[in-house]
Length: 338
Ligand SMILES: Cc1cc2nc3c(=O)[nH]c(=O)nc-3n(C[C@H](O)[C@H](O)[C@H](O)COP(=O)(O)OP(=O)(O)OC[C@H]3O[C@@H](n4cnc5c(N)ncnc54)[C@H](O)[C@@H]3O)c2cc1C
Image (tube, rainbow, N blue to C red; front, top):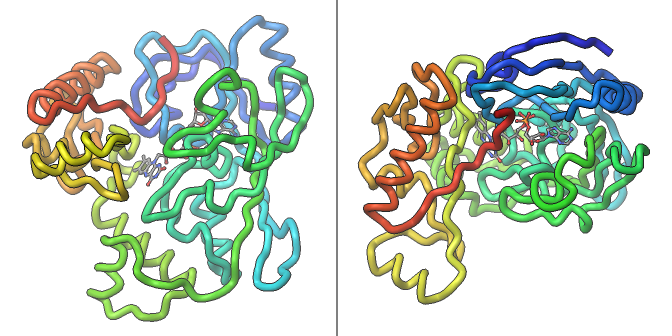
């Protein structure tokens, strides 16, 4: 277990903001997890679990606690193929994209649309990651996790995770922070996929005359579509989608939105990117934070000096969208520190 002291959160997160964390511990095996919690008890400090930091924004005063950086590696077959179905596992510190590649190269479908989402496998169930019509709730079977309340490893089946749009027991409610996910199992199917695919993906397939819909060709198409519009976190600081989509639940609200010319997809979803773009904010920079030119739902850190700059930019964007459309956007990435 490698323990480091006074490490800037900005160096551990893709938005590259935030003050120092008191300790950072690299977790390289399941055995390291209870040992790290024991270290935290000994020092009476709180713990925060981090994967690749692609959905976390550090605050300016830092974190007087211990960040556990998940580096538990390994993946393979959990249950052999039977009647075209297979269960694959990945330890949680693997990159999600590597796990997707492993699955599509074996010829199985179910997570191919999650290709190129930054971050670790362990974080995928936390906000039920999703893209291009898939999310992890559709294929996840269970996770293995360290339960720091009962100080033991447990299996959590999908039904107990309460997965919905950007939501799970791991990021909402009384069990936030209780589990360190160490392993994820998904159930996948062999065979060709059936069109139609998600709009922008289908357009790419049509434009490029791709008619073979294997998991691997769909993976490559998703990667190409994403590359064309999303910033690469290795080069440009961002946390991906900055605002959650707006979900309308009543027919009256849906009709009111449509009457104003606002697109409502899938029976209730207003894309936050559409609201930001049509409020005229795409390509604009506020306090060093730029509304990404190719996808208005992404905020990139061009030259912000601090979390305070980001907070000021966020308030400005929320205010302008609220003034034009009457919806209050909510931030998607979580925050760490004070
Ligand atoms: C350019 C870009 C594009 C993106 N596109 C998408 C997209 O298309 N769809 C999408 O859903 N998201 C997207 N994201 C957001 C991000 O990639 C996902 O949320 C991803 O799952 C975060 O993984 P991570 O390892 O970086 O998690 P982190 O940001 O490190 O952590 C996220 C949360 O999960 C918790 N956590 C992490 N690991 C564990 C664990 N092992 N056990 C328990 N809790 C844990 C953390 O405490 C934190 O609350 C994008 C981000 C970027 C920068």
